[in-house]
Amino acid sequence: MSGSRVLVLNSGSSSVKYQLLDMRDGGRLAVGLVERIGESGSRLKHSPADGESREWNGSVPDHDAALKAMAAELDRDGLGLGSPELAAIGHRVVHGGLRFTEPTVVDDAVLAEIERLIPVAPLHNPANLTGIRTAQALRPDLPQVAVFDTAFHTTMPESAARYAIDVETADAHRVRRYGFHGTSHAYVSRETARLLGRAPEDVNVIVLHLGNGASASAVRGGRCVDTSMGLTPLEGLVMGTRSGDTDPAVIFHLMRVGGMSADEIDTLLNKRSGLIGLCGDNDMREIRRRVDAGDERAGLAFDIYIHRLKKYIGAYYAVLGRVDAVAFTAGVGENSAPVREAAVAGLEGLGLAVDGGLNAVRGDGARLISPADARVAVAVVPTDEEMEIAAQTYALVNDSGNQNLT
Image (cartoon, rainbow, N blue to C red; front, side):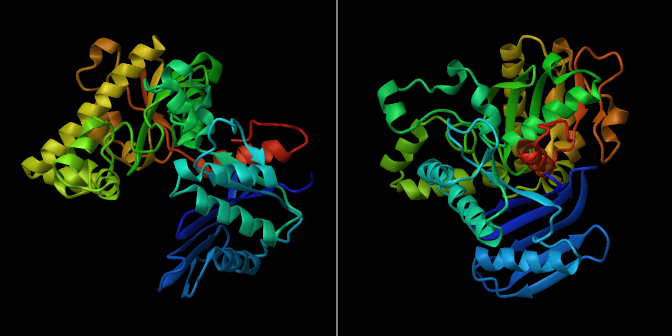
């Protein structure tokens, strides 16, 4: 295989994010976003590594038009899809069920299985499929690789993955804990080991992916043994608009006493809960501003968020038995010093602490924020899901099989 470039596509219901990477050095040749697909006022933002960023507004009726617009912008930079340097296209696919445990070259059987999984990922898998099929039409000769959010979590033991409900019912409807944000947890756990100067196989890490969506994972020796999201991305931590862990009987109560429909409760728990439901804001920067100004409602929302976070840190400490590092990542994890400080406050008995000065310093790279003599390292590790997708894609199609590309 002569090509060294990988195009990464993340196709959402009304958007396509893309990055073109050169796997020889991990450099980004172009980054872009097509948003509001199928809506009025569609927009494309495109930023080549060598040149001025460009923005285009117009009609983008569907994903086919979106990818053709992306291809035209890449052509303008001499980076077109027809280049022999393009080795493969890597696609983020949210749900791979139990079948897909690693990146997979797409064929008709793979497409059929991704489609079969739509009932457990109705918001994501259809858009992911559309992106793959559109890319196939543009470059039918090029390997298309699906990289699954759920794959990293397929190493969970059954004791962590099973819900305690009737086994026959669970199996009939594929009800189990799958986990999400897997590319981020894989990348960050590996980069944390690298930061510590150790091999991933020798390190136990609790990864806290804290963005508008948030999840935690317990990673033992490079393999996930537990994660906070479950059948869907609703379970687990308090998130921007999602409730996280809730007594299942709340749903029955709202149906019987509140007269709410299943769709109304779905909207409540996914879009009107979490931080926005508690205080009306889902931006941690604004919540902290309100907390500092003495806003009690924002203060309670922050305390609930931190309380849930501490519970998962403690639970995963127990699951792992030995913890070498706790790694904060994603938008909130990488940028909110108050969240990091509060999350480990009072956990000194577990060997966890942050150095106030180190924690306050903003930086772009992976860094330790714990005292030098801390028993457990506390780290900030910027996630790079696109690089992880590109690396897995390139390793799969590269004859050398070299997976150490990040």
